[in-house]
Length: 335
Image 1 (cartoon, one colour):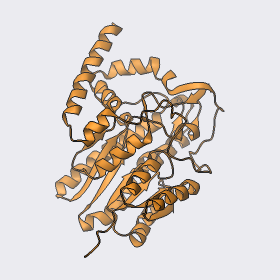
Image 2 (spheres, one colour; image 1 turned 180 degrees about the vertical axis):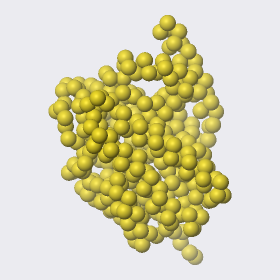
Image 3 (tube, helix red, strand yellow; image 1 turned 90 degrees about the vertical axis):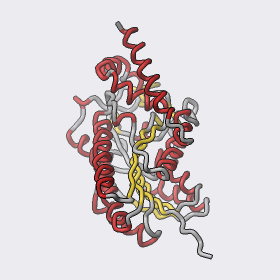
């Protein structure tokens, strides 16, 4: 009797945060995982977690902003693990700063990692998936792909670009009648280490805009989306729906609301070292794990995520209705 081949999954940004939690989720489900990131300490630790679940891990210390490195990584996966079944585009970086204090070099770097890293990953995956006419590419998105916030212009713009790229890719695959699938998962604020290592010019410590969710919420949704790729998008939390559809209904109101509240909501606590270099150009040493500093405030479960995973499409429609009602009430209150 032939044994079923284990699923081969590539995850970028695999050393920490959402990527690290996603590595654990796929490993727990029996996959063999190729780990792509710059930080070797985190990659090696993630590999040990995969192996502890009985799987095989392949460590690939790669900067996703380099297309040749990404393509070479895909070649190595195919040679050492076998045909790639799922490719998860997840790697990111950011800068917390007003636009007027940003440099052109910073905008370029965030765009190269957070947007072009997805493009290069997709091209590398398609090289193998299209000839076989099978495979799935998952793009890890954000509510910020639809609704930008202050102090993260480069990151928000990159997420918007990912959404545009994904829509073109999906349309072309549908046109070609390809069995290669792609889907996008829109994420809420998450408790990841990025807030401790991202370059920042904020006067206080950076935080995710509440409500905050644990990265495992994201990982479960990514795993589900990877195995249900016919659906265009997945929404990991109610806050995502509120941000997306609230912005569609009243974008100008959202601009004014965020102008008033969007600065404080991204900061907490005392001062941080100003002009902290962070991990923008170089990986920071050490294993940073999946979680950030907000465990006490982060939710471990999402009602909307559960509804999406359990095939409750009405959850999205109800969410749209509630978002519309909420925006209407807020607008009347503001008058």
